[in-house]
Image (cartoon, rainbow over all chains, first blue to last red; front, side, top):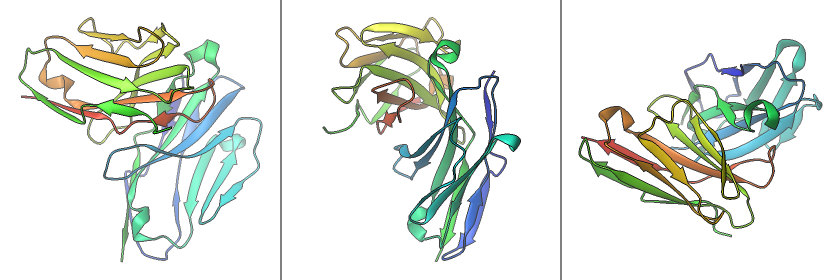
Length: 117
Length: 113
């Protein structure tokens, strides 16, 4: 069965600090996708990134970067020079092959990030 | 394209009443998902449609829950004889392919009193 663990329940930083959100996953499939979503106080889940299991290249998008390591089953998310607007709950999620799980997303429990001015 | 719409945004109901939520996905998306999110937790999968066919249901979806997508467009989620444990955010998402990024709606927050 697939599982996603986000060990950090809450993180609090001061603006301009860098912060890394950890994500560890479990799956028996060789083909899977990993996602990060942001959930601001308004409640809507905002898609940030999708990564397939065959692409371990790290990705950078502005102040956001993602580090995918299959050897440790981790898909960590770093925000550089954090801003108050980054305050939200961040979810890591996993999707296995459709024949395994119907392409459902399995979410971690989320990390509440608070960026203080 | 206005994204995924959910209605209502909030619903307060008395225990034992029936409630129905609606989801309008992005028009070209053939896949539609329902998730439930309780406070402090990540969303949990409830059910999944491809076009009008309901292809998968979670064990979380008790027999008091039913979902439909009659013409492969909008979907409804009905909860009969609501219980306090049903209080949660109900999220709808749609996608074009199985591994595409899902687009979520803003959710319907249900409070059962």
